[in-house]
Length: 387
Ligand SMILES: [Zn+2]
Image (cartoon, rainbow, N blue to C red):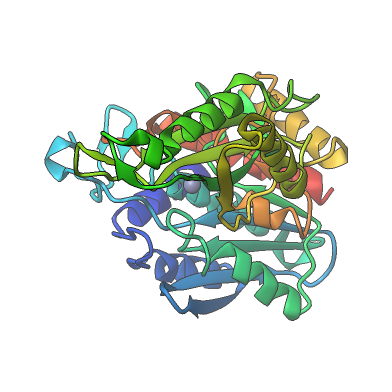
């Protein structure tokens, strides 16, 4: 079998595994078999925690020396939604006109298949004499709460003496074509609830009450009025977005005693969580003056902003992408969070995978050409990395 066919065949088999998060669905067992056959040592580990479902994870490695390149990814997928809305079954792995359909085609079973195919081909070419180490860090817990996945798997690996030099995470980084975008960082994310406390009373006797809605509106306006920053060299401006206003008052003649509004902040590398909280609370206090009683309940967050610094690894990946696709990739920090936020604590991480246009959508799909291109890019990266 030639290598593009391997990536496609493996991608189809993975798509037929119904691994809706956090179910394993046969996807990790499939990878375990393929990687073991290629000579990698494979470990399966299940992590659990009160209040969340236990989740299966996989770690595989070949070689014992440095440098150590790790391919990271997740085999869990978001639910397909209304199955009848799909033109081709969500877990069928069907190919129509050069396009492979299925939940996870781009996010991100397709990229895992490409990385495995590239590695198998590389190992076949170099035999046991390959320099350094290649590993796979694959979780089944990325799309949901992400507490029993990569974050624990990295810790587990570190406790066993595993040291990674660089990581490629196969999230669908590209916007329109394979090669147009590498993610070199991600914004942070914070959730909070703004609470304004008033005094309950009859609407006909407002002088005996204190309506918290006035204070809430004033504080919300103040927090939306001024930008948090103007962006930084590698990031766009941070953004605060209110997502819900909650008073829950079922009657028409009662001034409520309390009013709440929830918001999310996506923030860049101008801020730490602490400095951001301080800035927002300072603005709220300025708007509240002496009259409004308020507080902000911050939810815990494990999503800080980070940036992988320019250097030889980025240069290598950019060079290979240019050579294999003819495109000059943009180095981007846009989009939501990913498991890269955990990996960056262990080694430099870049995200490069398929085209993200249909991720989490009905008829998620990738072209076979893209699978071939991505496999060729990963394969060439292995050549250069271990040269
Ligand atoms: Zn993903």
